[in-house]
Amino acid sequence: MTETLTIAQFYLEGKNSGKVLGLICDKGHTTVPPRHSCRVCNSTQLTVKELTGRGKIVSFTEVYAKSKDFPLATPYTLALVELEEGGNLLGVLDEKGTSLGAKVKVNFRIIRSDSAQPTIFFQRI
Image (cartoon, rainbow, N blue to C red; front, side):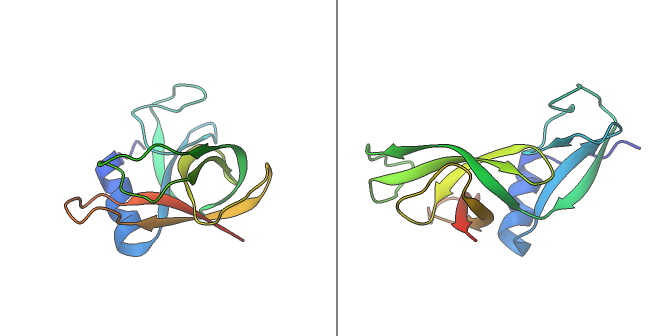
């Protein structure tokens, strides 16, 4: 059975309930954020599944440039997180200072009053 999950639905569910939804293909690979096909095998047989939202930092960088479209105080840490079920998400780390392999949990937060789409943040656990 193929189910769809749009980017808008992904963020709306995160904003409303805090749930992280992903897509699982018929071979068991996880795709998040959602796409039209599996990120590993390109299968289009996808099922929507709630994920734990927990993962580990696999890469990060410090951002020093301000942006009117992304109104955060600088510097902030942008992290790439590999989720426990598979798949990667890019988001802002809540705290200063981190290390590769640090355990985190996804948290959705609105940072712009003129936008309904939340931003992905990671909270250390």
